[in-house]
Length: 563
Ligand code: GLU
Image (cartoon, rainbow, N blue to C red; front, top):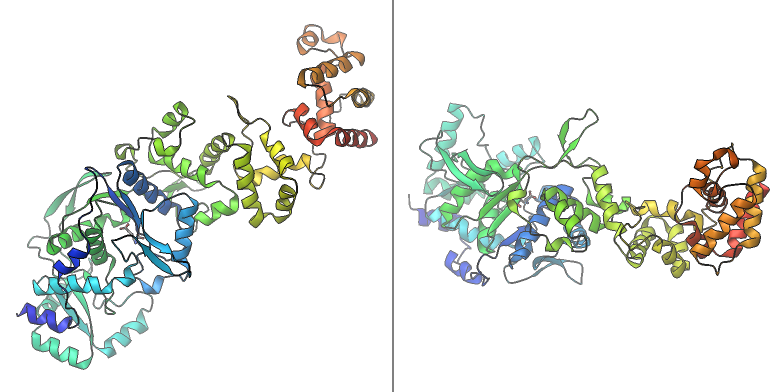
């Protein structure tokens, strides 16, 4: 077979050589040990939690090593592409602070453009490049065309509209006879090719898997999974589909080589394809990158069984987190705890340090699948939010409320200082309050400060006499001095307690309960319920300072009226 002729027949428009393409992608000048990683999503929908996960790994590995992290849009499957998904992906990743040094970006006109010297970073814009390497493989006798006539194509389209037309399938289940027939396809002659082309028939390009022993295994070290033995590839995988667009496999090899990826980080669903990729890299004369196949994210179902976190599950779509009011900082922090088992310990020891300073270690990654759990996420989130400044909390809540609770947004922005004063309660110090896991928790917490949202939720337990309550509250109104500090305020509450026969000190009460009608804690509780509507609230003195004397009196008066 004259492979050069075959290559020229199949790719008459390709004039560039692989060397010429290689020159456009010079070796990156990076410090020793620097890693080049990428996130390579297909724009088929939203960013999945299971996508943010590996992209965080890629980002960390690249940036901790002084390397490069880039974004490549893998849009080779036109039929599954969702319009606007690529733009959505870029925006979502930005929201989570995943910073790309190069890759696909949204241009000012809204179209997808490229930033960096190793682009284009959108596979549909790289057809010409793939064809150069495809032609080279044909020239070397390592790939061959399989033609389909227009009628056959039409027939196939009818039966299976969803999947790309790949021609006759080279499947695991193929019988010996089918295999023999498929192997015959390798023997196409120049004359047959010429006649097909003259007919205008389309072809897919398959790699010719040279495998003399299908039982043979290859050893490969995955940086997460360890050393694996996988069956050598014996399938003539499709490299180019009939529309000339590459398959994932071919695009992966060409792009990751040219773009200088040192570590391919991807989901473990690609692990079975690895022997094919190894063969392809070898055929193309490319150095094999290092691989890290990340275990799938699991969740517990109602029966407590581990299940894969699927696209439809709550917690899969990153846009859900926005709607539910999770801070991106909390989500990333949670991802770090899932990624490295020692992250939490490090974080406890270094509470002020950002996660970017954590010495991320591949060896500490789970090989079997992390368990996604909202309770744990909420815990992590509370810890993250409690360390934010009131200003940070305010900004994030406002941003969230603007889209998801416009009325609350109005309230928050009408008096910024007031809102910030509320959010400052219990912040700073060694044991900050942990009231918020999501921004949806903020309104119920702040409701007591806004008449529009205020209501009496709790009641004073019935064992206290209404007369005592009334008397304590009335005494408080006449003695409350907002200029007093916290101590003086509490001294006053103690004095009121004594006046109505309640112990000014809980210990005192406990030592002789019969001598008192109650204690100072009970009187504080009367005040708390009257002013905040709840049995539990942040520091009452501070609440009164924020809402002011008039509001304190108004609430107490109302409460007494309804006693
Ligand atoms: N486009 C592939 C996917 O979304 C990327 C896999 C890879 O990172 O190589 O699954």
